Figure 1 (cartoon, rainbow, N blue to C red):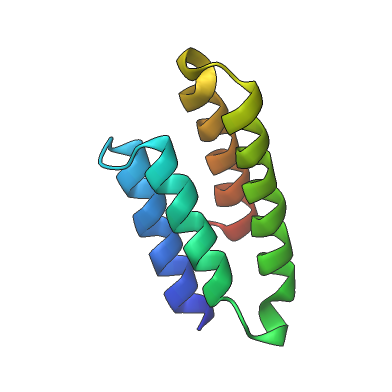
Figure 2 (cartoon, one colour):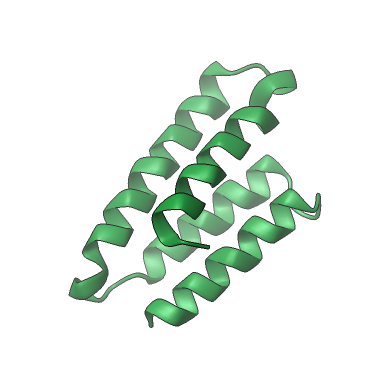
Amino acid sequence: MKNQISADLKVVIDKYVNGTYSESDFHSSLNSLIGMITESGLIDLREFLESQEGELERIDFLVDAANQRQEYERIIKNIQSFTGN
């Protein structure tokens, strides 16, 4: 399952980076992926992604639209660093 989650996560990130996904699309897709992580061996990944999703919530509410993309890219770099994607 880890390989599938990793592949799906990469697709979601790529779609955002390439402009196919908006901030809302990315956030929604990440949230869906988190819900798919049910194996106890992947609890660290789930908890990390949940923390990053919380940061996206913060960005959505507190950061003006002109700066959201930059903040989302910071979160994506955190995710890529953690997952090795």
